[in-house]
Image (cartoon, rainbow, N blue to C red; front, side, top):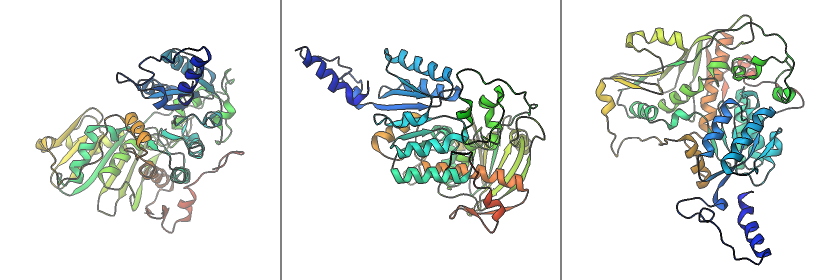
Amino acid sequence: MHRRQFIKNTAGLAAGFGLPMILPSRVLGRNGATAPSDRIVMGCIGVGEMGSGHVRSFLGYDDVRIAAVCDVRKEHRERAKKAVDGHYGDSACAAFRDFRELLADPEIDAVLIAVPDHWHALIGIEAARNGKSMYYEKPMGVSVAQAIAVREAVRRTGVVFQFGTQQRSDDRFRFACELARNGRLGVLQTILIGSANFKPIPDQPTETVPPGLDYGFWLGPAPRAPFTTMRCTRNWTLISDYSLGCVGGAWGVHPVDIAQWAADADGGGPVSVEGWGKFPETGLYDTAIAWEVEHHYANGVRMVHMDMPTALHRAEPFKLAWMGMLFQGSEGWVYVTRDRIESNPKSLLQVRFGPNDLRLPASRDHRRNFLDAVRSRSNPICPVETAVRSDTVCHLDDIAMRLGRRLEWNPASERFVNDERANAMLKRPMRSPWRL
């Protein structure tokens, strides 16, 4: 039962039997519980491997009620519905195949979007049109034009938008960025990034579409392609029809987002980009398997985005066992991953910032930060403008690799300078009847 109906219906039922309205304390929000009438009603679109983890997490918040789930795969939506109903002890969770039906429900306040990348923009725009705030898994989409279109829809409707680059809600990454932004490293000179990479696989045989999967809807705006199991697992992140691969949504946007934060470029980006990339010559996966792309910012910062083996080689002088992100300044460096932080000099890790230092927004729980923003109608830690700018850098990488030459970028116009071939690559066609 939706939150806005709960109290009214319960009162009506009691009155119908001539009974006084007696409700448990949890219904009234006593003893620290959140009353149903004050809960954020959520829908979850995409409840496969990544999305199911989000469902479990959102179920853990007392002030959230998951009212609906959606997936083109029947087993995914039935599994998610069972988990939700089991948690609440009822059978009220709706299950949809088509995201448009879920988004049309006026009772839903916010949605999780955790579908394949080629669907992100269309669903995000429709969510904004329906007034739904959104926790939007990275990336923004499969082109810069898609990212910009989502941003315009969010701006126009005023919904709350949180990008799924959760490293902004990690103390280590924020601290490293604050060291850089406050000059504790001296003048920030270079940011080195090591992203995940993968091994190619052969072409896969065509298979029969399994019962319960709407494969045509799964493909949606992407080109037609024969079904194979490997295409419809998370391996789709390595296929260019659906993703940028490890350069972008499969991993790269996470460290790129932090690099933008450290370089004070949340509202902008680099002014030039150049580098090389190696792509599989055959097989199902066709996104970059190795790369090194260099970016220059107007403030003098140089950022180098690489695959992991290339990054390990570049970081060898620092004797770092696993390459995450290395911020180099004129007077020291700091190295950070999701489970460690190191510095030279070591005293940098003991820095305590004062009242005159720049402090970046703090969050230790990315989903909680989103929910709090929904309640306050404020920007979360990774709002849509930040998301688009970070996502764009990954697209610049892919375009520079494919063209094999230096490109000049104008962050204000979000266009390449005097390069129509490169500008044409900022958008992609969609398969009819879908359009941006």
